Image (cartoon, rainbow, N blue to C red; front, side, top):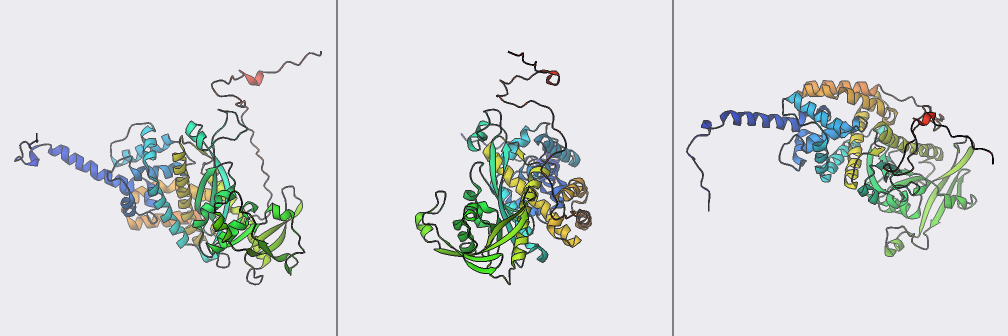
Length: 493
């Protein structure tokens, strides 16, 4: 049975005129909301992430309060505020809606958390790629080293919420009892030191060696890049693939296994601290290699490298020596002293990880599934690279290298001034004035560079006197008034 329309000849103005007008007004405001003026960050970063481009890549056609764009900017704000809670992010959306006169969503973080799950990974990766293109395009000549883009690779780890799904993919360390620890996710990161941003982060098993994960990041190296790494990455296969496949260069510390067998008399002497040596391809393919036996045999049979010996002070304050390896063989175009000093810049990647885990509060990811953990890692990379865009422009204004600016200082400028950008939505001239003022303020946050400064890893503030959780929480029994609890001395036998 087919349904026929009823009263088709009546004009639309007869029925529900006021309701239709109100719905149209709400829809117009909702489009405004999701387009640009929901968040001050959306207007602040409009040069990098234009509203029209974001609307084109948005996989959803419906404009909702908890759509992709509002949730994306709320998540960015959440990370900028020290990885704040989801309740905080939901409150931000409520505030934005209230300001625009839209219906305010109910309190609670449930709807926001579900909306974060709906965010599609391709949507986030496109945003990340555009931000990185902007960073690469604006690299200053002073941030290069003899024309080379500097990159560094290293590993770190973060913890996740203690759920069965997280424990299955990223189990806690073996020394912890069930229920007494957190799932631990390893991360191998590739940082572009020429602009300070993150090029890629690869999640992995925390107990998986960094060198086994590193080949998955080779696709992010470009011709002429100079990759720095510690001795964990100094393997024949990895170096050959960087030089051969990616046409890049390396500067790494000599692996401890080769250092133990090092005979400084072998090879061709270049200077008292330099040697040219030839490595032979290992006879057998390493067990952890991702290459097939046929691919392994196609690698070059020999590899000529340059050793440079340099002195340093170890953590005990004692003089020690280490050897760095590079494929830059010409001592005239690439002096040994400059390469030795350059290797010390590798420590910058450790500072970048500190910015992520301490300044942005991403040392623990409050997510319940591995899927959300992966999205959180992408969002962490996006948020950090957005900060680096502001730092890059501020460094140009200050006439300084980008690594001489304070991440914490620039982040403070962003979080304290982003709301003022909502007042200049749709006013390009005033927005440019406000943005120039933000860059000027950020340029004032310059680090006090103190070479060779000793910073012992120790804390001054004492932690709270809580007991250690040694059993599952529902089995653990707390000692009441433990500050007054003293053990009775044992009687002599």
